[in-house]
Structures are given as structure tokens and as C-alpha cells.
Length: 196
Image (cartoon, rainbow, N blue to C red; front, side):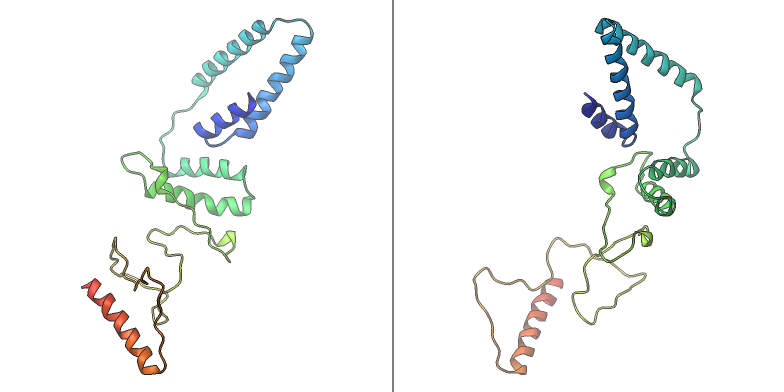
């Protein structure tokens, strides 16, 4: 029962599973005590239902209506993150997370499938940052390519521009530099033809 409640809590809210498990565990402990004293289980269940109804009624009167703005989102994200990771990491990540989610918000709707976490090897967690754009996590395909470009054009294709090997296991061997240069020129011509 506790496992199902924690799963539901995580699926619906995404946070608070530990609190939920502890709360339900304590309810069960108290219920066991009353069962030992001879109280019928139906009375215990009715009492828990009445308590739930009363809690929900109180929360409706106690809640504050606030406009959902960036400051509120940052407060919520900070509260949630500080329960999961160290504050030295949680505080810088708070604004990154809020900005990432608001970047993909359309018509007050968020498609969580548009969010991707990329784990960059050989980097520190404190170096995390939000990239508003395209991140290529592989190195350059050619040694002469620049490592950084700004204000450039990006072409999206559904075909590969790389020279592809044949399905037949074959090889091309050269015996001198001229033959190697001819192979490179041939591969380049093939790719240029595709591009054009």
C-alpha cells in the first residue's frame, strides 16, 4: 500500500514521496495500536476519511492565491531542489531549471518531453548551465572545423552527409600518398554532390 501511494505521489506531484511514505507509515502504526485495543478496522478507516476531508477543507481556507510568475517558480524549484541535493548545487540550478521550463512553455502548457538532461562527462556539477539553442555533444568531424561559431546558419537534414561504407565487406588500399588524396577527393565529391 505504501509503495503504491509513493508511486502515485511521484507520478502526480513529482516530489514529496519520502514525506508521504513516513506519514502513511505513521498512520499504519497508529492504526495497528488501535486494532490491538479492539477497535474495528471500519471505524479506523472512517476516522482516516473524516480526517482527510477536514484537512482538505482547512487547506482550501488556508491557501493563498498568487500569480504564477518567475519569482514564485524559483521559490518552488528551490524548495524542491534543496530537499534533493546540496544547497551549493541546488541554488545555482534553481534559476537554470526555471528558465529551461519557461523557455519551452507554449500557451501556458509545458511539454515535459521537450526537456532533456545531458550529462557531460569530465565536467563538474557546478559548471551546469542552460544552453538556449543546439548542443552537439560530439567532437568536430574534421580537424579544421572551428570549435565555436556565433550567428551561423543551421541546416536540418534527414539524410546523412557523411561518406557511407557499403554493406559489402570491401576495402580500398592505397600504396602511396597520391592514391590516398584521390580517395579523399572522391569522398568529398560524393558528399558535395549530395549537398548540392
